Amino acid sequence: MTYSAGSAMRAYNSVNTQSRVAEATPHRLISLLLDGALEKIALAKGHILRNEITPKVTAISRAISIIDGLRLSLDHTIKNELIGNLDELYSYMARRLLQANLKSDGEALDEVSYLLKEIREAWNAIDASAANPAAVEPVLE
Image 1 (cartoon, rainbow, N blue to C red):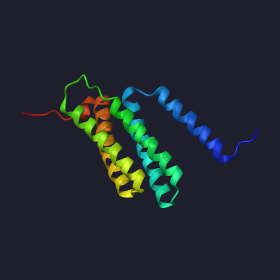
Image 2: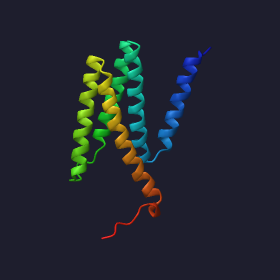
Image 3: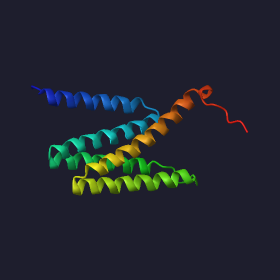
């Protein structure tokens, strides 16, 4: 059996992703999902620029699925304004991605990418502060 360079790379990436997920903490899993959504959006943008319709649809569909997964992972038993805001934001991003898919709208992709990067930055800051509580400055009243 022979493998092309492309199929070998896909197999490596699949094993690499599975390994990262298997070893990840719940916090890291959310980071991986955010990164995955950003990656799919970047791929979709490239497909739009090259007028590659089928791969664009696939990339955006996967990004929507990831965002839906993030939305479903929210703990709605916690009555917190942040949970409600994130739920609405994830819903908005999924709608914008759907619009981007229908209209090949790169600006909509950029908007969702920007929002996801903001969430990822905040999420990763939580991780850093949890790993090193001394890095968090106390609030003085």
